[in-house]
Amino acid sequence: MYVWMVFLGGSAAFSDRGHIAMTVFSDMLPPRRRLYLHLATDTLLAAYVVLLFYLGAQATMRYHHYPLSVLDWVPYSVVYLVIPISCATMLVRIVARMKRDWQDHRGDSMPDFTQKAVV
Image (cartoon, rainbow, N blue to C red; front, side, top):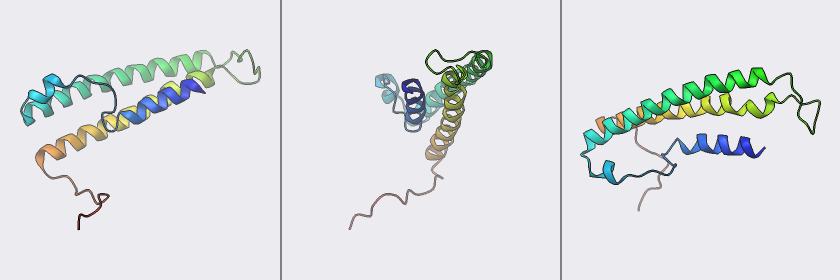
């Protein structure tokens, strides 16, 4: 269960760049170059997530016939199943973040109606 929480929590942190990052260099860049840096790192990250999805799916299928040591009626693949699931959600979040960064840079993003109005 803990493994599931870690992977799904890591996926949730991709939405708003919630992971620990060193931003000293990127904060000094002009907005356009910062956008290109973010898009480049997100592209590399997406490639890694696709690879991890593939390897996680292989591991899930490989260990499907082995039972857990505590619950012999549950296949061991249940433990590995979180890898492809969380990688799929990570990839969706990374692509959505890339799209949002691009739209914010161009200035054609939708207004945020979730913010409370200051009266």
